[in-house]
Length: 286
Image (tube, rainbow, N blue to C red; front, side, top):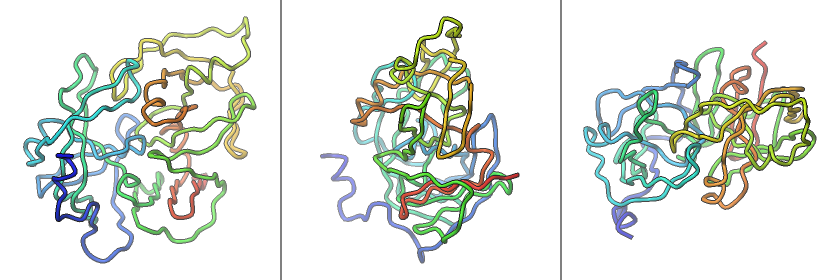
């Protein structure tokens, strides 16, 4: 209630200026798409483009320097140790990404910060969480965000379902599975439940991996070879996939996450996530 009261008299997700498309340059670092933005008129800040997150996310030092005051605590869950994580929640007065300026945005503050990770936790944002559709042009290194994308044709089109996160259908060894479209993720992964439904093969080894995400290390993660994946005709036969414990985020979201498609899948295409037309459009860069 206290958090909702902080928005009294304010319009959440209020776009400044005329609605239209906003295009910004990005760079790729460690298989993450990075854009530059400002919070409450701050100096430039690097944000990871992360459609696997429901909210704009700030580290505690950046929130403090930008004047984003924590108001309450919320429960969050992501890839990690299979448990809920308590985060602070606050309100960003203005977020600027290139020519895009949007006011009164809920934000998560990573406090307390996770310890023992190989890299510090970073800031992230998702245009989808702001109600905007988006196109990522990996060839031109450009991100376009708009309330409505221009009509265009694609090499591949997948139906898109938005339920807190963007989901597309796929198959794993012929079984239908829902995948999160996660620009902040690196690989194609499947859940332990999805992996458990696959046929057991004596010639297939589970190769332990060290994987960490927004909830820390996942001690149960492993590599599962010889998996056949398909996304509306985009096929990956005998592919090796990372298997992650997604039970806790599934419980928090209210449905079973079958898997995640990340940067190594998306980077070969011009990617359009069109909320209004409920579709994921992919155009090959070849």
